Image 1: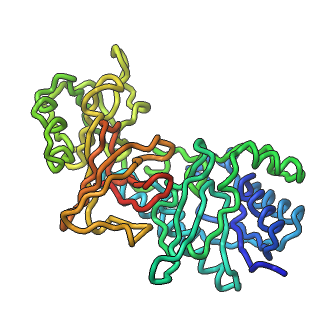
Image 2: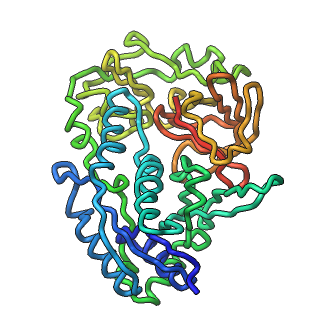
Image 3: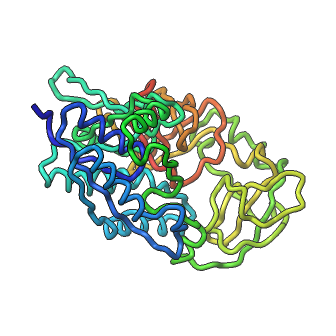
Length: 394
């Protein structure tokens, strides 16, 4: 007897291929669906991430496993929900995370709705994460988003914006495995994707020349690169040593007279905090890192070396409208605090932190200074291995 119908997003990679195989072995009725999304050859390194090849590999995997397969074109939705959003964020000097958005808006919204319309009980992906469920005292089923067993591949961070409703319809068949085990299963089943390299590009766009991608709509504009010295006086005005979390969460602000001009750039919106490459300024003892961008005046501020104090902060803030709880039952109210583990980027080791909720803002204070806290990126917070919430960094 079949357990239910599952529509799996077959990407043409080894992870989703093995996920599909395992689901069928477990007794589910499995249908493979390849999502064709936005693609622009003027900015995509097409020979490195050809969607046609991926689609063909997905089809061959479906044939090998013995499941139905079809392709769905989501390029319009992806362009509207992800690409346009990325342009808008970069134009404001923020750095979006397309992979988090892609999961929230495409895989677990548009794709999920298509799957349900096709009679699916569940959707599935090849993400390295796990789901567990329990019933609370009132009998409501609560779903827990758990980190993948493989610490090097855990992708729970990318799913930090999922809701209880979305989780109720999702299966993660490979979350309890590590990458080597997944490849061994694929090899044993003679799947064409068994030794295929992992994709490195933006979610569903492919490997992209980011400056070329941004220059489609964001025009170059020459501006100054100002180097800020490590002994800049504001670093010693107690912002990071102050016990007041509100003060520690404020980004340092610079003006041209705080440093010296060391070069020119072609648009502050093309750069992000923590970036080292692409500045075109040499002759320094240590490499230059971007410590801030001033969009209003089109100025980039840089500092020498990865230990430059302008690269580190002890706290950040998330606006109330950008707070998302995967576990609503664990949310905190104004005036309350919660000790958590948090990360501000994929694959970062979890950092001890404290959430402090006010009426309009959530403040997140870290035990140790964090490198390159960047507006527009996502901070996700965990309790042990469970991801319980997230937010967009202001």
